[in-house]
Image (cartoon, rainbow, N blue to C red; front, side, top):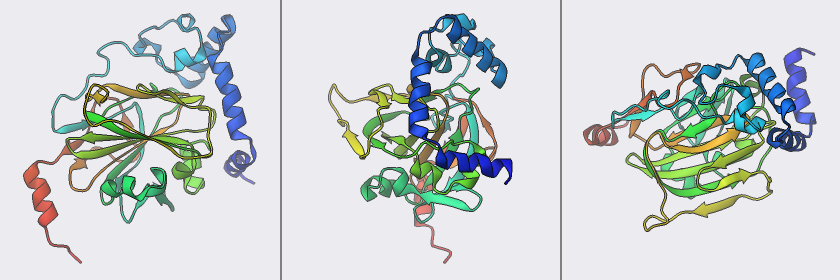
Length: 302
C-alpha cells in the first residue's frame, strides 16, 4: 500500500470529530510557555512570515487560537477599489473554479459534487446559482485565516450543515468523493449587486471552530440536523457588510467556496487552479448590464 493510500484510509477510520474537538480544547487553552512553544514550533514547521502579523512576537498570543486567527498589519492587504471588481476573500490557493453545470461543481479530476447538497439540500436556496460560477480556495496552515467579503452585500441566510471532518488538503480532495458536500460546513447567503452570493466555510480535520462575525462560534458543538437562520431585509437588525469587511474565520485551516449566478461576473484570465490568492486582490470582473442582457438573449449553440 502506498503512503498516500494509507493516509486516505486512516482518515476514514479515525474518530475525526473527537480528535478535532480535543485539539480545539488544546488550542483554546492558556498554557503560558507551553502555548508559546507550540506557536514557535508551528511557525518554524510551516514557514510562517510573522513580519506580516500585527503582533510579531509569539509570546503575545495567550492561546494558539489567538495566534492562528492573528490579524495582519493594517493596510497590508489593500482591497481592490474598482467597483466592477470582485476581490479575493482569503489568502490561500485556488483548488478549482469554473461553471456550475447541471448542479455540479468540480472537486478534482474525476470528482464532482452537488451544489444543492453543498448548500444544505434546499432546492430553492441553490436555484439562483444554477448555471453560474464557483471557486474553491484552500487555506493552508501557514495562511491568514480570516475571511473577508469579496463584494459588498446584505446577509439574508445562514445554514449550518452537519457532516464529516475529512482533511481538505489537495491529496484528500483528489481521493475522497463528494468531499466538500460531505464535510461539516457553514453557508452564508448575501444579497449583492450581482444577485445572490454564497460563501461556504467548509470544516476539516482538527478545525477547532468556524465563526462568523454576526453569530460568533457556529460550530462546535456539531449537530445532526441542518439548521437555517434568516435575516431581515431592512430595519435596524439588517446586516450589511462592505467589500473587504471580515465575515468569518477558521480556527485551524480549511476551505472557502464561493458561488454566484449566471452571466453576472467572470473570473479574470489570470485566475486558474493553482493560483496563490491574496485577500483583497482582483479575482473576477462584474459584467455591465448590457453584457448581461446580450448574453442572456444570445441564441443557444445546441
